[in-house]
Length: 340
Image (cartoon, rainbow, N blue to C red):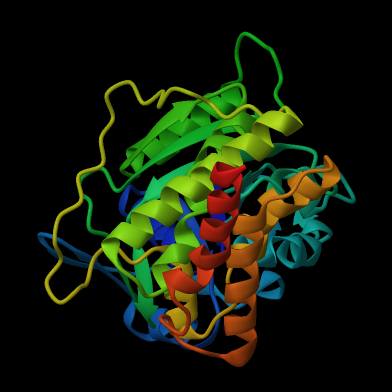
């Protein structure tokens, strides 16, 4: 029996990934929920692209109880970072039809697609074979039953590696996983040090929350530069070394316009627009955590985390707070530092 990918999470990344695998002839089941699940069951998944739409008929499930796992399955954790631990707990001990009596899902390989630095260790607590994946993708999910994928034919770029890093000459499973994702339209590079690639992505992801704040272009540039500088300072002090090279070997992601779609909205903005939880605590909050563990501070990351945390509790839409709210204290600190 051929490999099957069980994609857990029907957001932008999970939905596009499942659709691309299915279009490549690779067996897939997408685990989704709510109106998105019902729309896909009834009509299929509509993938909106620059050159037109694809309607992809997918096997879908509402949860682990609806999926009969076998030893040919690979689990793909595509939920947001804040939902990862609950999903891992819900899947790890599900039975697997296999020659070895007592096999469970934790015996299967799992791919972790989360931003931040926590998902791989969370998976390793239960799963014996964990491959971390860092992905760059321009996909959006705002309406049930459809996703927007504005880059084609390369729909995303990714780095995939065993966690924790293992020094070995060959990894047949890694090579096979990379081959499947490449067949599905992703430019994927196998790496031996996935943690450094996750750290590299975090340097960009700490800016995701800025998309939710109103303000001028100049304020946005100021905030981005300051957040990245602060994050790099904290990571350096903690000995967390981000990868320094793209490692893509010439792979590119060309983003084009899709009729009726407003581009440039990052995943955090999409979460607030849908009234869903955000991953800010696992992005800016990750930097705050590392800083506190090493006796440091990360005031700008902490301020952004607090602003968006309050906004989520209040149920406020994007734009409820401003870049000025974020930058005011930072500017005072910088003026005091300069004066001294």
